[in-house]
Image 1 (cartoon, one colour):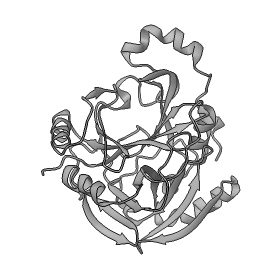
Image 2 (cartoon, helix red, strand yellow):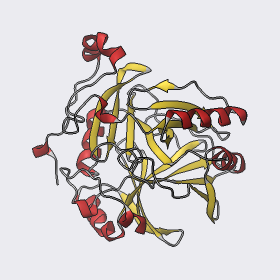
Image 3 (cartoon, rainbow, N blue to C red):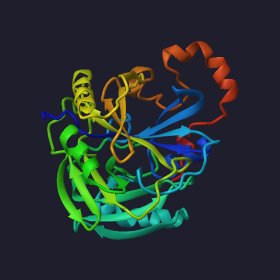
Image 4 (tube, helix red, strand yellow):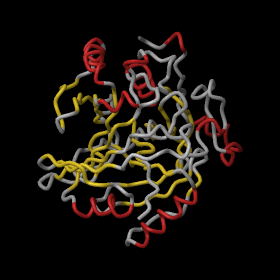
Length: 332
């Protein structure tokens, strides 16, 4: 097929504590807090967004604030790990930073001969990775320059996600036949799929890269319980509504259930479960996060989609107070 997937758009996980979550990702990882809003399907809870300076597709990590959710348990049928890209020259910087901030980690260790990987966890137990790879040198640098991490050491967006599955063939079929990935590597039970490099429709809307999915085959592990500290879903990016509709048509034709197109205000979404049970989303690059805030004001106050503005006062009464980090409060 003439695929219209460019790679990962965003990854959404679940947190129990919004303020602790904000402090961790801004102060420790140097991601910009780009949007404080609510879960549109559950407006009494927050939806927090982090990314590069503008929250470009391919850099966006988001969290549903669900404090009453069960604790997640690792297993199959989930996004097992979310990986960020860093320059190869920054590996020792991050080791020293994690050590000084008493963030437990393991590594660095080699993967596929050309990657150095550091594994660590956020306060809710979400598994994260920093992957040092030469492709970081090829990216335009859109990092948050007012953050705590020097530009030359900063996270460059996503590198990959790892899916854990009981088997891999049916998941691989969807990745290849419907989303346009190609198989590139295998190391034991780890199978790698990549979107071939292509020119972005708009470099202002798409950082490039963030185009790798690893499938980890774990046939003797119990199925995951999705909860606090788990990834809820992974979204793949497409540059237009027209191409999104084509993708949805192909997904349904392949025998998978898909939602209608849903307006998420900052992008348009279609959701479906791949055969192994992981929730996938197809998200459009536009409109983006500056549709309702200036670039300077991103993440500084609660914003709501227009259809929720009439109940703003009610929502403010039930949402726990949080504060966005001020420039002089960010720890180096």
